[in-house]
Image (cartoon, rainbow, N blue to C red; front, side, top):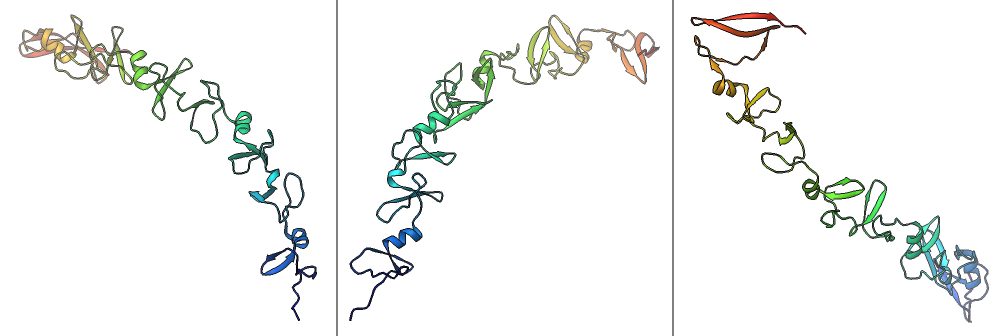
Length: 259
């Protein structure tokens, strides 16, 4: 006598009928679908054994229900995106939600590289220097008047040029007689020391530190041979100035410094 082979749940005989094994237990199709089938997110019907069950993030669909929410095209074996738990093909998602390029006004497709600055977005190939038209990419750039410039082009077009070396002044410049200089270029004509932050004077349009100017051009005291610079110096709260010399001893007269 043949041993019975019954559904694990309803105990109906499975001989001559389709059945499904689950954890080594046989179930008739009706019982299996009732107990274990997933419900389709779209049509809300059970996904039976005879159809393909497509899943994404614990959600399930019939193969024919797995389609774009907007255009209704099938998404089976195609790339897709989701928004508010709705399936969208790449094209519909891009048209609806993706950024638009600030330059060409076209959609920046998901997965493609985009550049962002102050709330605007660009395709990588559209984010270019206004002057040389080359893509800026991840290089440094300077925005000016709603345009972007790579640093070399900005310096060529807008940065002041040092009077001495003719190169752009990007930081640390000084102005002398309404002309721009690099700090490193603004030097004493005599000793070549930097004059930035120091007192200096000029002769024939050449700048000199006070020591060099005095040594080169100031008259020498007939007594002590020290250059008479005529400059005021502050010492212990009083102003001192050479007036005349007697022998080798300079005579110093003092005037009280008034704030």
